[in-house]
Length: 483
Image (cartoon, rainbow, N blue to C red; front, side):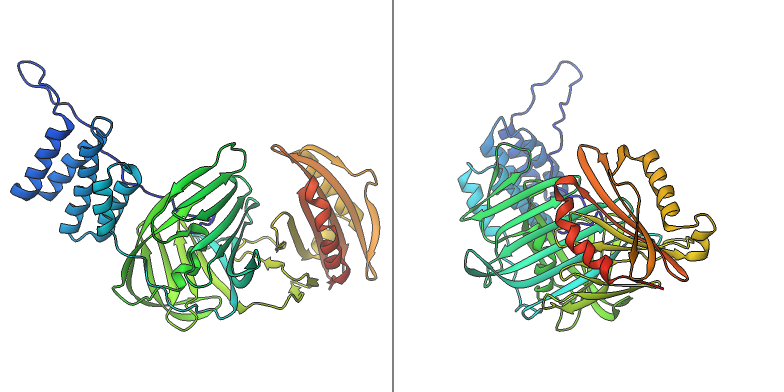
């Protein structure tokens, strides 16, 4: 599901085993046909009763699918049957789904595979009322904070019709990567209607769901990808909300199909609740269902009316719940951070990494609603800064000199470094331009000295988006007080 760059775990698909050609002692023996190998697999399964050996034979038949679609489809179906006999329901479901996805013209076995798949997972009533918002700190295994993720779900409108709107924001503070997504879902079935997905490095995608199919358009690609879907296929970007609605209990198992717009693919997920655990996170102590997904991800979901996702682990990183709240009413929030206070505009989020090391400088990241800017406040003791720089302008000049060494195409704005006031405090401001890969970037930075604290606040964005952040950024600056 949602993936942190914190991101997310890699999908695993059933793949065919390469066909081996056996050579006799006297002369090469003719390779068995797909039909002959299928008969061998059936004999091994039904007469000998060796299911593992039968699966290996069937996988070879699937690998020869181009020689006989019908034989390959039956072999893929029988792989699912063998897994069923072994009690491996999750693997069986994936095998049956592979029949549907990979052999659509083999209608006989597609029909049988559909009949063996579990039905759509039962969903409980929404646990979030009219909507809520949860925020997490993303951490490496050593405990270092590397970013934040926010999930929000709320009642909304799409083309004049009521829907649930699911949003995700993710910012990785150690490298500046950002991910934002939005899914509109049916208010009754929670089936997705459309979704959008954007990532700093991986690009953008849009998925439109219709009857029996989903069309995915990737930025930079001329032709869309259309996937055939059966039953309910949730969008990967609404996964957290779907998990919160499952009727969890110890021993609960289910499977579901999700659409990953990033990979333009359907993915079958096997889900199991292994036990109850009590865990403690910054938001408090919770008794949780430990829910494991067969793609190497684990979620801890609170055993209460809210069904909060309290923790998740994937790809060597984890996310711990730091706050859960009902949706605000579009009100600005007050920030109080290491001797700096400010008013943050409605719809913005803030995050300060924990366990950030011994540095005296502390950072607060401010995240705009569209996730287009890199906005932050850096704070440290005035005495430490003044020992090197006797004024905000001198501090600014040093910062710009460092930028010049590391930024491609770096230039300072035509007005250079200018003095200014924040309240009655001395400050300096400058604009910069540079190139980040193929992106033209622009930034603004302000340095200010308080009585005991030194702070700088700035933001950077692609040049064509820079001005859209000018007004909210100035609102933050105008409200700043530095100790």
